[in-house]
Length: 398
Image 1 (spheres, rainbow, N blue to C red):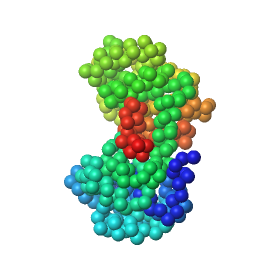
Image 2: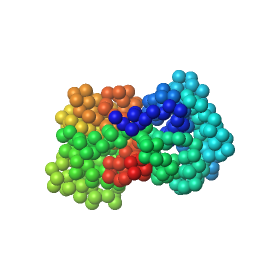
Image 3: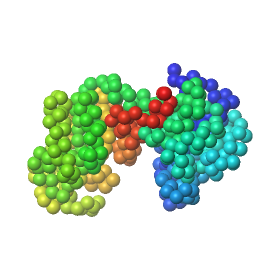
Image 4: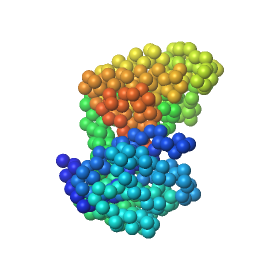
């Protein structure tokens, strides 16, 4: 049983680092509450035990201290609704007198939300005094913010030093994130297929290097595919390319061949005469891509090839879209891959979706409940897979 599940929070003040960095529109209405919903099981368990909750989070990237548009007060009413209309107390600072007083008067069953941690520069600097002041507010420290686990900030890493081993732990979301990532990293059932998309090879070098040691198949899509194609001598027109990474692309192709890993690059593309939702488009084999055109999605032959590999997989990691799926004309590749992953999952494959755009895609096509796990941590998940030690995880395990 997990440390969190076996801990009794009765009469305890749980200081929880959550990731409520949610998108707000110009009216300050939350446009995607996935991150808040993901933390609810942790909050419910503490409240059901008879504990109280002090929530810490950041919102946006305030550069010059406090700013109304980055205030966490904007999420109060929605959070209250998600917690069955429970009243949410709000401290207009995270370490000031009001926060201290409200925290010390907190009664079992009450929820206190602290103002944006990043209104203080000390948060991102990992300031010890700042962490100490935050730590003094609660009895138990719970880190449930996987999305910021790769940052050595005061509230994600330093603060844990002020709690004993029994009084610092991961929340349920963090446990699930780490558990599912470890499953893919260390005990993936074969065949293991990794699907990588997105714009740049340079963003994914360390990930590809790691996957060459673990995966049976690596599928490359998105803008980064054209760097691989150009490296092999294909004409890619105006497609996205990193000319300084061509040698690297060839090295990765060779490494994959040497290790017996199947590195799959698209064989055809949906091309456009400009980067525009209303551009003229055609589907061509990649050896017929002409100057003046750009590839913005994988074509039907690539979809069929990739889908066949996906269907034969027992473990799938998906990070990055196959094309510019935000535009309807170029979403077919990403949608088809998402559907194939859902189908493979139905047949017993374990599928982990991670990285902002893949998560956005799986949500856009309403398939989140048809895959095994959707990670809330983009950068954190990538760094974890790259083999880096994440400060937020190390602080609890230390």
